[in-house]
Length: 89
Image (cartoon, rainbow, N blue to C red; front, side, top):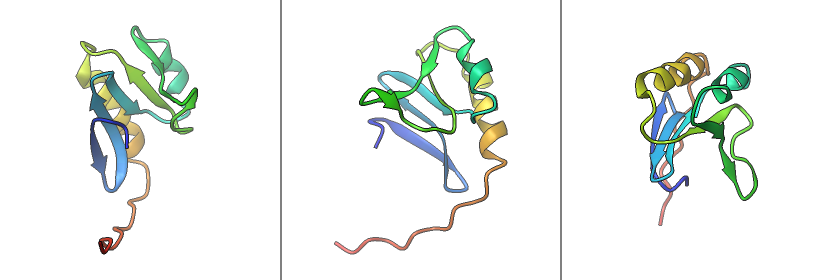
């Protein structure tokens, strides 16, 4: 979906890594502080925000531990998603 490798926590997207960098789901409340950090920008797809819940794209070479900490703090609070049955092909 995002053209990279996506990591989930209890069925919720935590982050995605691709050639464009890291996309971390930090939540709407933490998004302004996250965007103030160096090399951060809103995650855009087709000219609009990819995720209204505060998805932030960070250039590669960033402080990975800090960004994952922000994403974990947000995603750990989300309710787990129910597993969908596999699609028949």
